[in-house]
Image (cartoon, rainbow, N blue to C red; front, side, top):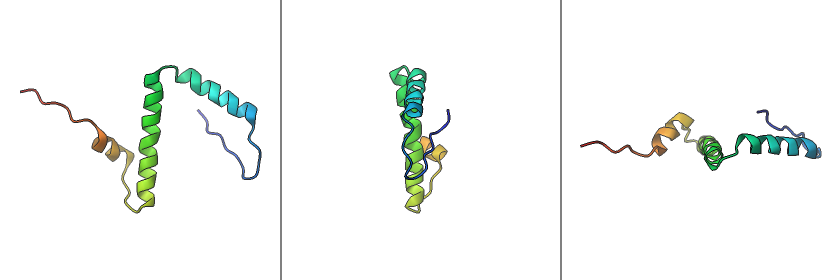
Length: 74
């Protein structure tokens, strides 16, 4: 899916925004899909924030750090 680009001081194309919203809603029609999309974006934003704070970490490393520990069979 393409991202919307907007030049500074230019009005938003409401028809394009509405079309993209409808496409997003169609492809994210379950709560599991919405949650997965938010998780993906959240990890990217945390990675960007940490790089900004001069503590870079990759998205893959964040996934490892935030993964729920698996229970060991005894």
